Length: 438
Ligand code: URA
Ligand code: CA
Image 1 (cartoon, rainbow, N blue to C red):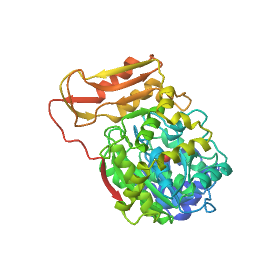
Image 2 (cartoon, rainbow, N blue to C red):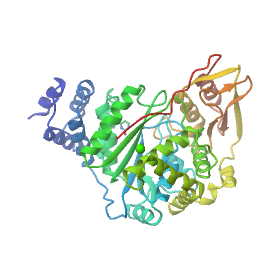
Image 3 (cartoon, helix red, strand yellow):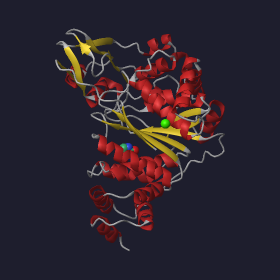
Image 4 (spheres, helix red, strand yellow):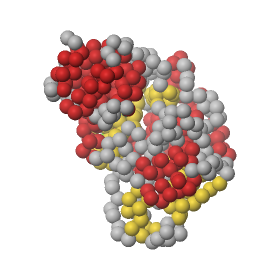
């Protein structure tokens, strides 16, 4: 069959066979299908969709386009988590060490930040000395010793996704639920974990703007994981405001350290989302019998400091200097030229926050990248002082900015101000968790 016939099939809304999908991915990865034909196929998929079976075939074919990490020689059940990307989302730095402290094996590969969202690798590298590019051999060694390591993807993990994503980016085919689901799951499956907990964000700062879309994506990713023989669950969580208060690299590491030190209340959204994700991982792995027991275990590891000890050890084994993870150490790293305070210009309630605007403002200060080549300043960013639903008086501080380079400070301040809506009317804040799919 010529590939044009397969494109026609999908353009007419028909189902593709396993063999057609496999051959398509293999031929495209090896340059036997040109970009223009693959673009047409991606658009046909965006318009006509794919069912769970087709999406699983796509994810599996992509997964096998490069290296597949085999973690079976490591002890215990291997656990992973993934977030579809948000602002102020430092859950990995909390959940990975906590789950390891509870007896899980967390061998995780993470990504970098782009645009308004942060990336775990950039946060890790904000602690001097930390090397996220470990050899597979060293990665395994660290996991064996400490139960947890977080590194960058190895060079040849899912090359099909790199090629397809670059194409989708410029052909209006990123926003397709089956293509997103198979792209994310191909990388998760190739990373070798037995248990995968997904955090699908919805709201102003997320890929999925509506709850309905977020649930559809979550359902499909869970189905793909199950059909591929893994234990998977997903949580749909809110991204209508930053998850944590800190947005910036060292700032987010500091917030993770504070949470692991028991300094953040249980009612805090970041705390709650960390509990849900950690609990899901422990339950699926059979390390806890239910949510209540899992939460008790996680809480105990916060209270007795074992979670923080795991995080410190993880940094140390990856070359980082753990002395920076103390209060004094963090102060040293956050020694910026200038602190600027955004203040409320009226009394009222924080009615809405635009998370994307907050993330972009932090990026303008140098905390994130607009293009892959941009350099990050680990010390800069901002700390929110309000959440949706808070009441404020004129003059109250809404956010504290950590500034080194002032080139885009005015622009960032304006965007930040426009992203925090204050009104006389109280609006009940969105819930932080919309549902769990397993
Ligand atoms: N993130 C991914 O990894 N892939 C997508 O297609 C979209 C978001
Ligand atoms: Ca549960």
